[in-house]
Amino acid sequence: MKNHLLHLIWGAALFLLAACTPRPANMPAMNHPTAFDWQGHRGARGLAPENTVPSFLKALEFPLVSTLELDVVISKDRQVIVSHEPWMSHEICSHAGGKAVQKSEEETLIILQLTAAEIAAFDCGSRGHTRFPEQEAMQAAKPTLEQVVQAVAEYCAAHNRPLPQYNIEIKSQPAWDEVKTPAPALFARLVVDEIRRLSIAGHTCVQSFDPRSLREVHRLAPDMVTALLVENVRGLEQNVKELGYVPTVYSPYFKLVNAETVKNAHAQKMRIIPWTVNETADMQALIRLGVDGIITDYPNRIPGN
Image (cartoon, rainbow, N blue to C red; front, side, top):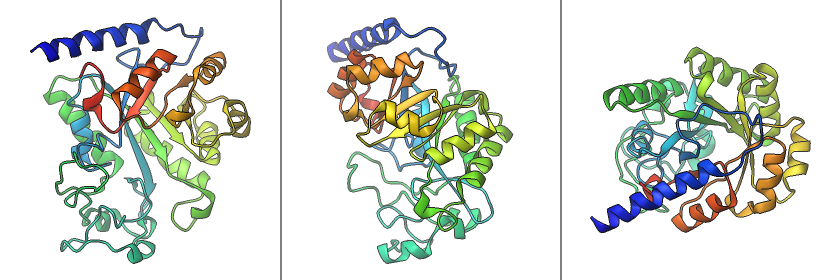
């Protein structure tokens, strides 16, 4: 009981700290239910199979989670599939009969060469994940974006929970063009069209490490919230310059964030939301720096949850 009370007090303190951190005037907003944006990475990857419906619903069990972060690729029949890799990973996926996918098979099990029905036959949850020992192993398939949105809406209605935001990553890079993923122009169009069809554009951010894809999204939907993912050391100014426009969100690897990074992002009216932060002490340190949100595999480690 004492520990629970301490968690509640600490969570309230962090909320007030985030809410009271000065923000530049006219900073773009995503209509988040709270001032600070806690994002469940691939749902709740530390607790349930990544990028699956059970993982997203698990993340929603934690009241402070306001956004579901996920990755998308494209199937042979042009469905938007929720998956980190544009292939069936040997680390987590199994064939319909239960045989584990071998690393040598990955080049022949490319999602762009499989239909949505064929993709659904693979089990990418029963084997668990060696790097996430707290993850509960369970049978789970790679869903379509539509299946995720429908399941989330049903869960929120049943549990009287506000609908979350979505942070959707386009998984593209030049080496994959027209082999493992569509070229950026087509990829971006398929994702934007699906977001609009599902009526989630008003509470969706599209992110990518690939500036080409973000530029295409910005061209197709200038008002859509976008986030530039960063894992290089070139710095904020150079990365934004190379992108060619100022995105709504600057999203670097958390160890690249310091007080100057936060200051510079806010000076350009960008939110700053680092990834992927899995230790509570690191979360606390970033909040003190003034970040606007945090992406984590472990929503259960969010202070106050």
